[in-house]
Every structure is written in structure tokens, then in C-alpha cells.
Image (cartoon, rainbow, N blue to C red; front, side, top):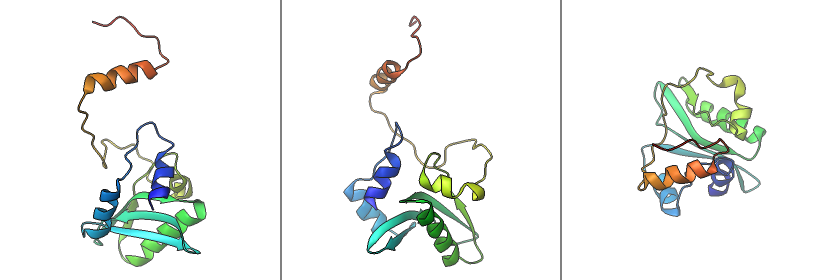
Amino acid sequence: MAALQDATQSRFDVAMPHSAACWRWLLAHEASNLWVLEQDDTVTAVGRTTPPGDEVLLAEAAARDKAAARDLLRGVAALVPGSEVRVVHRAGTVTAAAWQEFLDHEPRKQAEQYYVRIPYVAALLDRLAGASSLPQGPRP
């Protein structure tokens, strides 16, 4: 599970990998359900859902390939008959490519999943400014 999440997040400049303690918590708590798809004793897809209700949110999905991503979505939908399954779009990932036809393509008005606390904002801004290929103008 961790390897799939790490591989999925490795494509992005900003990522939020789960620590071992976070994985233990995700496996133990009841606020969401962790779904794992295995093939030949290998985890091929993983995702978390909200508890069943009128709508189920499938988030943090990661998959080895498009077939595994589709199987994960089919499996979650089969587990919650009568509920609508909404997925969190992670652009540029295997799941996004596999689920393209099922995604809501309306732009989001706000972030839905994470927030980040940045202890040293000035250091972050300096680092981001140094990473930019745009010309730097005078600073006020």
C-alpha cells in the first residue's frame, strides 16, 4: 500500500507521504474504510472511502496500472450498491487516466483534501523563488 502511494505521489513537486504511524492509524480507525486490491499476493490498487451512505467518496486511490484502477472502482461500487461513488481526481496519476470517463470535469472552487502547516513561510517562499525559471523582479 505504501509503495503504491509513494509511487503515485513521486510525480508531484509537493507530496504528503504517510508515515508508518499514519498507516497504522488508517488501518485501525473507523472514520473511513481502506480498500485493497490484490493479485497474486501483490497489492495492485488501494483507496479509502467514507462510510457507506447516499454518496461514497473514494480518495487517495493509487494503482499499479489502469486495469487495477478500474477493478478497484468496480469493487468499491459493488460494495456499496445504491450509493453514488464519487472519486477524488488526482491529475497525472494512473487512476485519473483509468477513470477519465467517470470524472467530473468541472473545476473545483476549493481544495477538498489537505491543508499544510508551514512553520517557516519565508524559507518556503525563498526556496520556491529559487526554483522558478521566471525572471525575478525587484523586491519591495
